[in-house]
Amino acid sequence: MSGYEEINGCLHVDGVSLKDIAAEYGTPTYVYSASVIKDQYNALKGAMERALPADKQPKLCYACKANSNIAVLSYLRSLGSSLEIVSEGELKRGLKAGFDADQIVSTGVGKSDSEITACLEAGIHQFNVESLPELENINKIAGEIGKVATVVFRLNPDVSGGGHHKISTGRTRDKFGISEDTIYSAYGNASNMEHVTPLGMSVHIGSQVFTVETFKTAFEKIPAIVHKLRDQGHDVTRLDIGGGFPIIYKDEKLLDLDNYAEWVRDIILPLDTEIIMEPGRYLVGNAGTLLTRTTYVKETSTRKFLVLDAAMNDLIRPTLYEAYHGIEAVENRDAPTTKYDVVGPICETGDTFSTDRELTEMKRGDLAVIQSAGAYGYCMASNYNTRGLPPEVLVHDGQAHLIKPRQTVDEILEKEIIPDFTKS
Ligand SMILES: Cc1ncc(COP(=O)(O)O)c(C=O)c1O
Image (tube, rainbow, N blue to C red; front, side, top):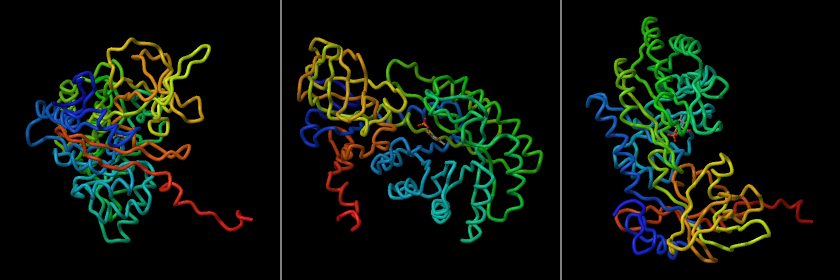
């Protein structure tokens, strides 16, 4: 049994009942299906295998900002994935999960000195550089510790991709990447630097990119730049074409991966470089749910509220991006339906998962899942309202594995310091 399915009237994940998971670990709890992660990884890998020759298969670098639990990273590594990181913390997670440093690429507009140093010392595959000051800084730090950094330059192609303006990253107005002209300057500057070796470009236009044409528009800007750089005598041996593949939250039409892979074959492959990809959400998003229990059903003169024990601190996407997440009862799934405003207990009207959502009738104590919460869920959670972070459970082959326990309130409080002057 794989993925999410109803068995004897109760929702199960990879053969384990969500009711049992709630009984063992409490609620709210993040639950991930290993089989869905594996299927997603293989779907992307398979599309690339069908389109590209065996010796030109891309390095699939999982963008672990989407879900950085070390067990998830370790599992993706076991499937053959490499890793994309955006912080020293994610570097540490990747190394702890068993990735070789050479499988890791570092991205981000604000790489700190200590992050750059740690990446250089570990010997990562490449830095995706986002500005000229960053290039200078990497060269300086590499010089100080006697290293040479391999870099590629992130092109800002001025293409708007992404399912929400806050996750579009490829427009000129966005903070990401550098313009075509600046790429030439960056290569020129780098050729006078002893501690950086520029080997190519990267591009990532956003997240939840629904049309292949959007990727194609960005990809089509690449060949002319590569040819010009080569004409100028520069090496271009790597192209990192980013992530951004969408998942289903509601009734979205998914990207045709074969079609995408064909554009990679037609536009990128002829440039004869190593190809790198950075999928995040696609690998883990649909694998996860946030398992939650009904605290109260509250009726007012105009609304019916389903008050869950999960809140915006656990899953911020609905509040932050007005994102839709499916919500389903775990049991009594054939009960009559009614419309609820589905909310959490936090003291903000924004702590609302959905309004006017048609759901089976629920009562205090009933379990529900908030679906498609495997990406940008737990990793964006906070302690707002002094709520401990929920536990994470990875289900594999009929067995639930706790991969991070619930954070207790004492664990939150013990880090806080009360200066004497406040005590009088
Ligand atoms: C540079 C970079 N690569 C990859 C990703 C992953 O994107 P997605 O989860 O949409 O695949 C992101 C997401 O923000 C990113 O900024």
